[in-house]
Amino acid sequence: MSITRINSGPRMSQCVVHGDTIYTAGQVADDRDADVAGQTSQILAKLDALLAEAGSDKSKILSATIWMSDISAFNEMNGVWDAWVDTDNPPARACVESKLALPAFKVEIGIIAAK
Amino acid sequence: MSITRINSGPRMSQCVVHGDTIYTAGQVADDRDADVAGQTSQILAKLDALLAEAGSDKSKILSATIWMSDISAFNEMNGVWDAWVDTDNPPARACVESKLALPAFKVEIGIIAAK
Amino acid sequence: MSITRINSGPRMSQCVVHGDTIYTAGQVADDRDADVAGQTSQILAKLDALLAEAGSDKSKILSATIWMSDISAFNEMNGVWDAWVDTDNPPARACVESKLALPAFKVEIGIIAAK
Image 1 (cartoon, rainbow over the protein chains, first blue to last red):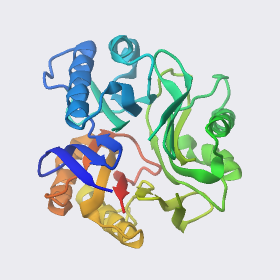
Image 2 (cartoon, chains in turn purple, orange, red):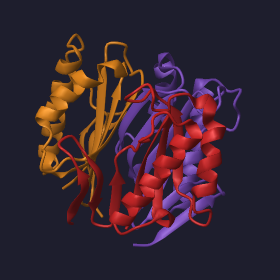
Image 3 (cartoon, chains in turn cyan, purple, brown):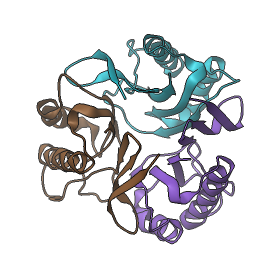
Image 4 (cartoon, rainbow over the protein chains, first blue to last red):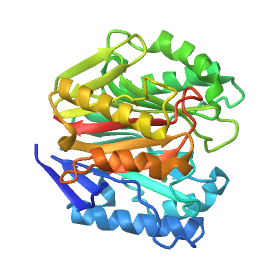
């Protein structure tokens, strides 16, 4: 099966497509001053863009992993997630607390999707 | 490849099947008052049920991710895991500490399995 | 699709191959006294060996998850990662902080790769 890498830098690719399966890097917000809802919105927009580049969209997400630096903001993140997710085609999901690469990052989301 | 979603709610599906590959959501215990061993047992029973619904079973688990809110209870979780896992067909596994969505949740397990 | 398990013990397999997709367990260092850079080197060598056993190599890694017990050593880990990764074929990646199974473990890495 073919492997296609999207938005690759020397350290990682933001997205890798293997046959019919798409893996994204953990996405974080560009505006690190945004609150949990704002960072979540930015991340989901980046995932939409990556999926589009890979020839897919959010209706085909299989699995999502969400890391939050402070799980007590779970509801704030979910408010944005729930408004964004394709409710006819919701992915499997896990959401746990982990500190992220920079203290300013409050949310990170990586997904596996189908083409 | 076809995508089938099992036990879907507006936020997530508990299980998504893509061709021959099955992704589950992170499973947590229903009885949040149970200790680590008890919560682990409940979670593994839920995974058994999801795999059955997806047309698979624990002999076909490829990979498991285990999050524990307190990794010092690692051995207590493993006691239940070791008695449950198909020792002829054990999956790849990672187990790390992360606080979970509710303080009462001590263990969360998500898996990728084959059909 | 066939399932092949590599380096299996009663609790887990270090690697599981499903069709064209390879899942590794979270790898940790054998020398637990090593610093972050040393542990990262050992882990990446173990991943090279597992990929070789599975009939693959680091140019075909699709996704990597890196857990660090202290994310403040992010740059130290990345120094070793950046020197090791196939810069022509970098994987998707997420790196987050989680305490690991033993306090001495500073880094754990699990990957999904193509055959």
